[in-house]
Length: 207
Ligand code: T5A
Ligand code: NA
Image (cartoon, helix red, strand yellow):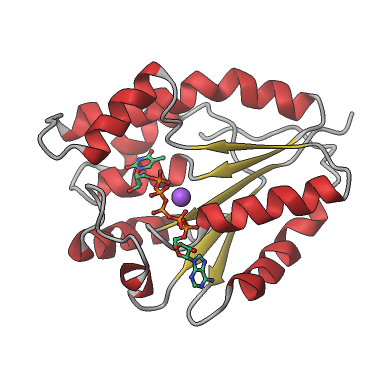
């Protein structure tokens, strides 16, 4: 039976992920395709509320390891919902996912594989669109600097960690330098169109 596709949009802070996921949701809906957006971290759950406090309140202390495990736990809270939607033929769009989880924590110096371990067994996206600046354009965008991780040097380290996933067969780099929202939207669509009617293959898991 045809299942829904699992599509992740990833990138550094302020690269346009939420802008593009919103547009993509609307495009698919207009075509009459069932689709659901899941944003990580999901700040509405109990664990998500702790994560929100951690991200927005610099006085709130957590060890890097505990913060990491909370982000992972937040994904495991949603896994049943994701699997159910996919089975029902609904396309699931993820605004950040495992890749952000690993990249931000590994950039702090935690072991890369240790960071991936708690996410093993989660459904693996059929395609990951990595919105990417060649330079540090994300740090010049409106609102950059508001949250804990929005610090130039740190963003550069996160980028290097994200790039360790480059080469996975589901990974697509999408350069956004100097491109307007519509131009990026068109490129996103070229990568997504072939998944928009779902897939017959089983969903893969992180392993
Ligand atoms: N995190 C997350 C972890 O450490 N571990 C984890 O496991 C996970 C899941 C919060 C933080 O948590 C970390 C990573 C993050 O530091 P978040 O809630 O996704 O993650 O962060 P947000 O603040 O919601 O989102 P971002 O800051 O990442 O922004 P987006 O979604 O990439 O960018 P967007 O679409 O809001 O756009 C930013 C600005 O740019 C403009 C927009 O209008 C907006 O003003 N813009 C453009 N301008 C010019 N040209 C374009 N093409 C544009 N596209 C958008
Ligand atoms: Na966002």
